[in-house]
Length: 305
Image 1 (spheres, one colour):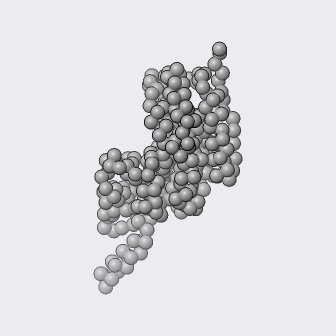
Image 2: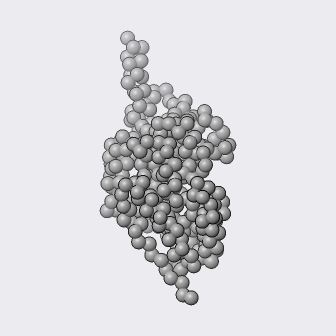
Image 3: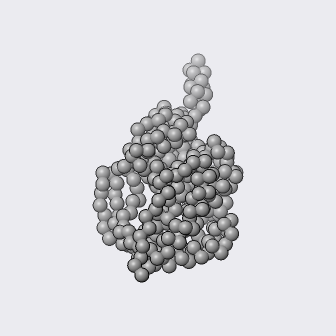
């Protein structure tokens, strides 16, 4: 009788990811695929605070990595997610959890999305996007800015960064010329040239995603909307519904990660970059079937000639 009751309990709880004996392995229920410098770390942190969601602590960078990840094979990948679930279940015992990971490289790394489709075809895809010119400048600040200080606002730690605008302009010009002279399908090649402008060509990336996954399996987010106190809660309510978990209050204003602050100065080719991105922004809006108000006007600081 005891054995029967035990087996009955196991059969009930195994319907989700709850497992009385731990998780030797697990597949992702969701994957944050990017984009870099559009709040992916903050998004991961906010999702990890939900009692029904569990996100791997590190960027696993497994899919499409070609052996570049610290995870060497699919068995090890599933084992890491299993261990992630075990850790979360120790904090929320008896809760049916969904497990996922965040690796922004997946959006632009050739072969990553295809690898997810092949190995974890039921994983829900989350992509956060930021106005492409601001995202590019933030990327430059991340990789080539010089940290000169730090301040704290609430729970958010902000790095104060000094920018070399001459170097930024040169980097952007090199990559922009590459993008102009390459078919958009080859935009991956230009990623190696400058400051990753190609990562802001969201229409190209979204098309690749939708060619592989049905729209019901993809949740596109706009950084400026989910970080705005006036609209953030509704965005997260929709996201929680998409992930099939209960809604909960979310406060994005004091829990942002990897934030950098720098003086805005004129950039020689800023207007050319803005004009280059506009058709891609418009195509992105067409793909999403809606207007993105936050991307309609971008401040261009003119350089004195």
